[in-house]
Length: 114
Length: 115
Image: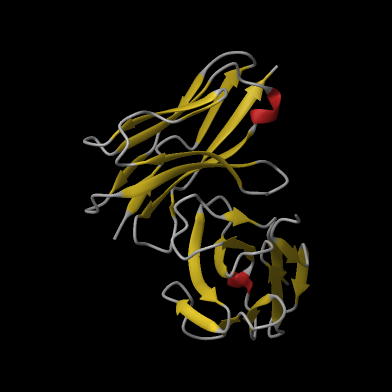
């Protein structure tokens, strides 16, 4: 069974600054996919970024980037130039290559302060 | 192209009543997944369905919960004889194929409150 752990229940950052959210996971699978989802107060689950485990290059989507350390089973999310609209819950998630089910971490509540 | 549509957005039921949650997948998606989110927690997998078939229901409680995805119409998650502990947000997601490596598309969820 896979587990996903987010060790930071809450974080805050000043607008325009950079923040990093941590995520670790445990699996015996060799190939898998990792995701970060954003859940704003509207409750919609929004896919922020996706990483394939067999790719060494870290994924980047505009102001969002990841630091994927496969050996350490770590998958952190860096948000640059934080904006007020980034205020949300952020969930890290894992799915094995042949799997059907996403396993989510417990989430990190991010507050961007003006 | 409308996204994943869930209704109702909010549902209030008294203990012992039945709750029916509906999910229409994105156009062209034939795979549907239901997740439950308890307050201040991450989403937990419940069930995975294709048209007319339940593929994986390992996350579904053994009693009172059932799901279907008929040939025509939306997927339905049914909770019979609801209890206070069923209060949660229920999310539906869809994908075009059975290995959603590109991540699901989620609906906005149904918040069930049992009073």
